[in-house]
Amino acid sequence: MKMFHAGASITEVRGMMSIAKSLSDKGRIRLSKLAYETGKNIDVLLPIVEAAEDLGLCSVGDGVVKLTKDGSRLNSGNFKDIVRGELAAIEPFRSAVSVLSRSGYTMTIDLSRRLARKGILYMTDEKGNTDVLRKVLVHWGEGLGLLSYDAIHDSWRKMK
Amino acid sequence: MAARDEPIINVNGVSFAYTGENTIRIIDDATFTANDEEIVAIIGPSGCGKSTLLRIMAGLVKSLTGAVVFNGKKVAGPVPQFSFVFQDFALLPWLTNKENVKLGLSRMRIGNAEKDRKATELLDQFGLSGFEDAYPNMLSGGMKQRVGIARAIASNPVVLLMDEPFSALDELTANTLREDVLYLLREGKFPIRSVVMVTHNVEEAAWMADKIVMLSDKPSHVKWIKKIEMKHPRDKHSKEFLALVDEIYTKLTER
Image (cartoon, rainbow over all chains, first blue to last red; front, side):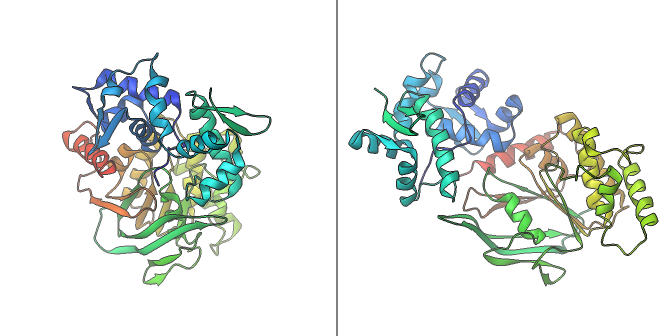
C-alpha cells in the first residue's frame, strides 16, 4: 500500500520544487541535474522527489522530474492550499482523517494499531512505528493544517 | 584491479524480512556475483535493504532464503577472509589508532612486535604516520576512516565489504579518500580480490565501481546490473561519465 514517505520534510519539498522550477526547461529537469544542484544523494533526494510526486507537484520517471500544473504555480504563499487535499488522500493521512471524521478523536497508539492491521507500517515494532507515525502526522498533518495534535494526551483531532 | 568474470562471491536468491509484532519484507530473491578483481557498488532507494544485504554477505545476518557462496562454500557466519568498513568508522575510542589497526591482525599467528610493525606500516600507508599512539577522538572524520580502512585491510582480506564508507565525510575529504582507496586497491599491494560497497552517492558508484547492482524499492529485488567498462582514473566531466550518471538516475526512477 502506498504510504507517504517518512524521510521528507515540508521545507525540503518546497526547496526542491523551488530549485526544480528555476532550473527546469519547459517544466522538465533531469534528476541528475537536480541532484547536482541540490548536492543531495539519492537516500535524501529520492524521498523528497517522491513526496512531491505524491502531493501532485511533479511526476518522476526515466530520470526526469516533470512539474505538474500545481507544481508550476507553487509559491511560498500557496503551498498549504495546493497540497493539503492531496495529502489527505495518502496514507496514513487518509485513515487518520477517516477515523477522526467518524469519532472526532484518536490516540496515536490506537491509530498506529489500526493502520498496522491494514498493513500500513513504517517499522515492524509497535513503539518505533508509532513514533515515526506521530512524527509524520505532526510534521505534515499539523504542518499543513489537516490535523490537530494534543501533545499532553498524544491524541488527534481534525483541524477546524 | 582489473575486473574479470570469475565469481568470488555468489549471492543466490537471497531474501530477508524483519519479523516482529509485524513483518516487513525487505529483500526478495536477490541474485548477483562479485567477481575477481571487481569493485561492485550496491545502490538503491533508502530502506531497500542494501546494508542488510551487505551484512548477509558478510555472514553477520542470516537470510530467510537463498545463500551467499564464497569460494564454493555457503557463508554461514563471519568469514575470516572478509573485512568490513563501517559508515561510522566503528573505532574503539579507548584504544589508540595503532591498537585499533592491530584488532584487524588479532587472528594472525604472529607476535606482538610483528603486529606492531604491520600496524605502523599500514597507518603510514594511509598517511597517518605520527598518529599511531593518538586516540581516535583526536582525528578528523577522514583520518578516522583511514584507520577504519587500515584495520579492515590489516587482516589481508580477500573480500572487502564497505557500507557507505565515505558518507560521513565532507565531499573534499571523501573525494581524497576515494582516490586513495582506488590507488591502494589497483596498486596490487593487498590481496583483496573483490570489493562490495554500498553507496547512496550515484557519482561515487559511477566513479569507483566496475559493476553497479541496483536494488528496487522494498521488497527489493535486483533491478539492474550494469557493467562499467570505463577505464580508471575516470574523468567526472567526460561525456561518457555524465551519460553513465544520467543512466543510473534513469534506472533508479524507471517504473
